[in-house]
Image (spheres, rainbow, N blue to C red):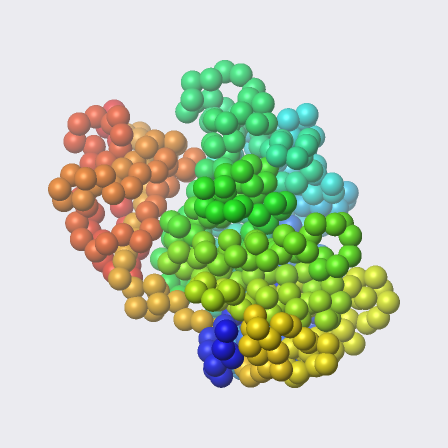
Length: 506
């Protein structure tokens, strides 16, 4: 392949976690910005929500319990102002599925854990439960996406940041079912009583399904997809140009092609169908966490890296993907080699839109092993990315640019043509019963003017429904099985999220 052209857009970022210094003071933020620019990166993916809290002052979540400078200092607001002044984007990273972790409860009485955690009566408990009754995976408590109020709160956490802050993007992490399963490919979580009751109401079943029950796994997978779809559309309705991304899973053996996707641990174990999300268009940017050790044990990780990259690049559809790598698991030399291979595909392949490294605090394995400081590792990584190093040698026949740095110059973030010059529109709204209560799990279909089915989805537990990337024009929205006449006309306009309200008959 030829050399990367100067100025070619590419998403380049650090994940900046907030379980240590980096975002706690304005001085730390200024250093973060300087380090980001030194590596010729153009975005910061900053962890503002760790466990239903926020490194910010204007959201529905309480302020994070950490060594943050006191108010009026607002970490997120300061980061946005200073990063934008330096020409960098800020993407707010939320651990969407995590409610709490420490053994001691949150200090803030308004934290959701107090009213909806392990001591809450049913149906007020929003916690995920495992098949064996456990309510905690490792030290983590999780929201159950099958509980309508829990799913709604996760969405509202995100939207409260979109409304209050001038973020360039929202980055969703833990948007899936948990690890800590009872076995590989045994998706053991999701047994909140409210979630089980909804599954039974939809299917007519009365049993407690086994973790691998196909109907049960499909139902749980759709609960996650429904949250992502709603976040995408509701964010678009507030601020259309906010880039919605997700940190997605690449466990185990990579699929040989799209037909093998359903055999992956991502799809079958953590119930995260990110391939569908990209195909449907409910993410702007997919950031698969292709975390592999290049050389060290466990064996087999290195050979999985390139095949996963190829699959990721082929599944961008009408959106974009940036490949995430594990800086903490490799040396600087190995990290540079992985970044290069992620960004420069085989001839004829669509390239990835960029790269994100985990993490700013642990930029190589020596830092992870506490054998040197993060500052020293970041400085070396920045030099390795922006200047030619003697160790940076790849097969010239493959890349044809052995002596060109990975990031020779700063470049802009890739544009989103589907948002900047939209050719499609979207639809969102509510479906309620005659008495005004939300219509849960009702199949709602969208038909064109010739009566052809365009798309259909089940409503969420709050009666919400949404459709993405529709051709402009007139449609009919109707509920399956509802009384005759329960349908409404809707008009789709390019670049707009059209509202709809459908009332079911008695």
